[in-house]
Image 1 (cartoon, rainbow, N blue to C red):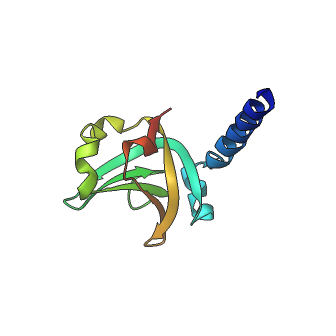
Image 2: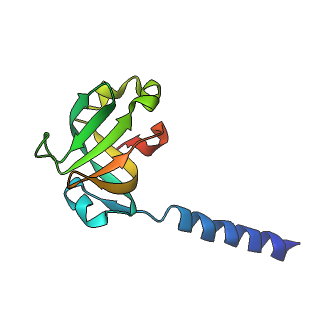
Length: 116
């Protein structure tokens, strides 16, 4: 019985390391990680609201920002306090996509944003 418990514990440790093995990068390096699941660490320099999306710009102010996290309107209700994030350091996790030659992560859940 003890060996079985130890094997289950080791398997859990191995699997948890695999699930959370994301690279942690800065906004300026995001363009090197298109298609990869990463954690971006940096300050949110600008928050822009439109009817379709909220843009959290990092690495500068639009259009010179190096990275953006995007929250689409279907998820606005999950981010009512989003304007309090301005000028604060955050971890943003997700898969980097490219849109208009800039890297971005689509934010669908508050769990993708963690204050540093």
